[in-house]
Image 1 (cartoon, helix red, strand yellow):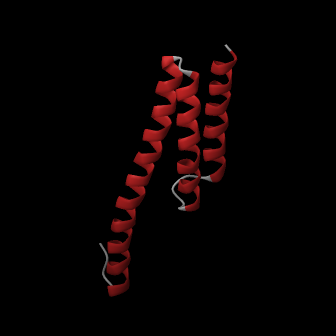
Image 2 (image 1 turned 90 degrees about the horizontal axis):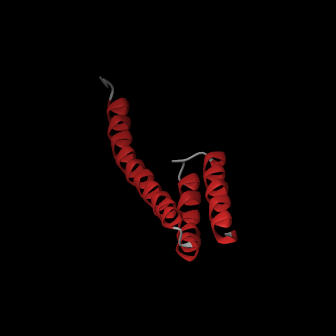
Length: 89
C-alpha cells in the first residue's frame, strides 16, 4: 500500500483515471457492437452510418491513450472491409 504522500496522491489519481478510461473503453465497444449488429442485420446503409460514427470514437480513444493507434486502425479497417463487402452484395 502507498506510504508517502506522493504515492497516496498517485493512487487516488490512478483510481480516477481508471474510471474515465473504463467508461471510454466501454463507449468504444458499444460503437463497435452497433456496427457489427448493423452488418449482421444486412442493412448496408445502417452499417455505413454506424461505421462513420464509430471511427471518430475509436480514434478519440487513441488520442486519450485508451487504445493503441494500430489497434484502432486495425479494427476500423476490418469493419470497413466488412461494410464494403456488405454493400457490394
